[in-house]
Amino acid sequence: MSLLVVGSVAYDALESPYGKVERTLGGAATYFSVCASFFTHVNLVAIVGEDFRDVDEAIFRKRKIDLEGLERAKGKCFFWAGKYSENLNERVTLATDLNVFAEFKPLLPEKYRNSKFVFLANIAPDLQRDVLRQVNGKPRLVAMDTMNYWIERTNAELRETLKHVDVLMINDAETRQLSSEHNLLRAANYIFKMGPSTLIVKRGEYGAMMVDANGVFCVPAFPLEEPHDPTGAGDSFAGGFMGYLASAGSKSDLYLRRAMVYGSVMGSFAVERFGLERLLSLRRSEIHARARHFAKLTQFKL
Amino acid sequence: MSLLVVGSVAYDALESPYGKVERTLGGAATYFSVCASFFTHVNLVAIVGEDFRDVDEAIFRKRKIDLEGLERAKGKCFFWAGKYSENLNERVTLATDLNVFAEFKPLLPEKYRNSKFVFLANIAPDLQRDVLRQVNGKPRLVAMDTMNYWIERTNAELRETLKHVDVLMINDAETRQLSSEHNLLRAANYIFKMGPSTLIVKRGEYGAMMVDANGVFCVPAFPLEEPHDPTGAGDSFAGGFMGYLASAGSKSDLYLRRAMVYGSVMGSFAVERFGLERLLSLRRSEIHARARHFAKLTQFKL
Image (cartoon, rainbow over all chains, first blue to last red; front, side, top):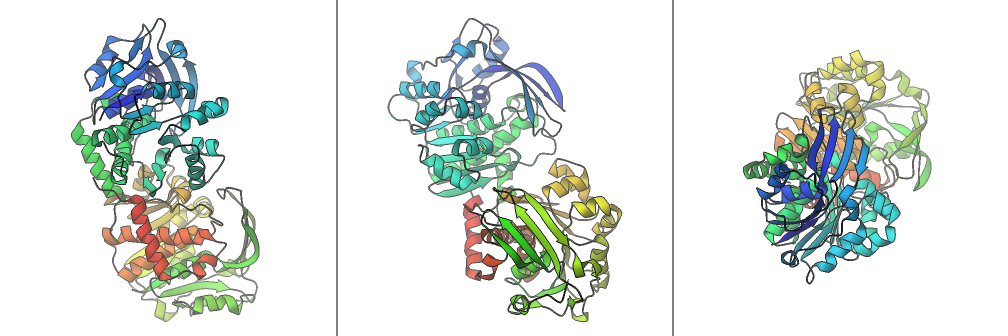
C-alpha cells in the first residue's frame, strides 16, 4: 500500500572517531525513504534549496521514491553539523541552519492524498497536523516522530497532533520527557491517553521496545563491533518499520513484530558506515539475511 | 546435577522510594541459593556470625539448600546498607561492615567436592580460586561474578582466577572496566582471551546479553510498572541461570538460552518486592508462566 513521508532532506556535516564528511546527503525523510524503498513505493514530501545536487536527486530517482512532493525553493538546503564522542554515545550539534526548511509548508500532490500509511518525521507538530488534513479519509496507520524541542516549546500543538496518530516512535529520553514518567510502561499508559495506541521506544544500543494493547515486544540492537556513525539510525528504523508494514498492508501483531525487526535491521545497517553509505550499497538479500540473524539473536525454545 | 555456590550471606538495610527495612536477610549467596533451589539442590558455602537468626536459617532449611558448608563464626554477620534513588537506577552504599566475612576462608565439606556446577559469587578472586582447588576434577561448568573493587585492587589475582572459569557474569560497567573496551563485542573478545568461553553481561532494565562461540543471545528485562528494590537482581539472575543449567545437566546452546530466560525470570521476581519478599512467596508455576511471558515478549515469525 502507498506510503507517505514528510520530513527533512538536508545536507549534513558529520564527524566521528571513524571519519569526517563536510557535506553529505542527510535528513530524516532521506534516511526514511531510502530504507522504506527496499520494501515499497514511497511518496516523499520535503523541501530543498538551489544547492540540491543532481547526484543526490539521483539517489531518490534510482529508487522507488516519488519526488513530485519535493519542493524546490530559493535559498539553501537545511544544513546540520554534528560531532560524536569517542564511544558514539554522545553527540554535539555544531550547526543547525534551517535555510529553506524555515518556510516549509508541506503540500501534498493530489496523487499522494490517498496514502494509506503515513510517517510524519520530526518537524513542527502543526505542520505534521497540516499534512494529515490533506490526506483523504483516515489512513490505515499514521506514525510520527518528535523531539525535545517540540515537547518543550510547542507542547499544546504536539498534544493536538498526537490525537490523530496511531504510532508514536521516539527515544527513551523523549518518552520520559513527554510523559514525566521514568518507567516506560507507565509512560506508555500516559501516552495512550493522548491518542496513540502504540508506543515504540527507540533505545539506541539497547534496541527498541513496542508497547500496545497486545503487551510489550522487545528487539535488541544488532551487535556490531565497529559502528561508525549513528546519524539517521532512528529514521532508518522508522523507514524499515513503515516500509515493511505498508508492503504487507496489515497492522496485526504478527506484522507489527516483523516490522520492528525490519526496522532494527535497517537501523543496524545505517550505523555501519558514514551517512547513507551502507544503505546505498545495500541489497535486499542482505536485509533478509540480517532479519534471520535477529531471530538467532533472540529466539529460544522452552 | 549438584550445584555449589560460594558467596555472602548477609543482613541488609535497604531504602528505596517504596519502603525501608532496617535488617533483612540478604547477600549474593542467599539470593542465588533461594532462586536456584526452585530448579535443583544447592550446596551453600558461606559464613555467618552469632547474630544469624533461626528464622533466617529456616529460609534455607525449608528449601533444597544444604547448610553443611555454612560456617558459624564469632562476631557479626556481614552487613550492607544501601539507598536507591527515586528511579531505582542509582544507589548509594551507606555501610559495608564485613564483620565475620573479613576472615572468610571457604572450606568445602567433603560431600560438596564433586559438585559439577559451581558459582563463585562476588568475593575476593583468590578465595574464588581456593574454592575451585577444593573441587575434585574439572566441574562441568564454573561461572563467576566480580565487581569494580576487585578489578581495580586485585587485577592480577582476578586474571589468574578467570583462567579457570567458563562463564563470566558481570554488568556492563564492569565489562567495560575489565576490558578497557566500550563496545561489548570487542570487550567479549578481550575477555575470551583471559579464560572464559562465555560472557554474560547484565544490563539492568535493558536485560542481559550472552556472547560465546555460538554468537550473541539477548533477553530483555521483564517490563514491570513498579519495581520496588533492585537488590539481589543480578544474583537472582545467576541463581535462575545456574539452577536451570544444573537441573538440565547440559550446557548446549539450547540450554544456555533457556538458562538466560530463567535467569531473567528470577531477576524480575526479585525486584518486584523488597529484599527476598517476592522470592519467598514464589511458586514454580509462576516461574514457568513468566518464562512463557518472556517468549511473548521476544518471539516473532519471519
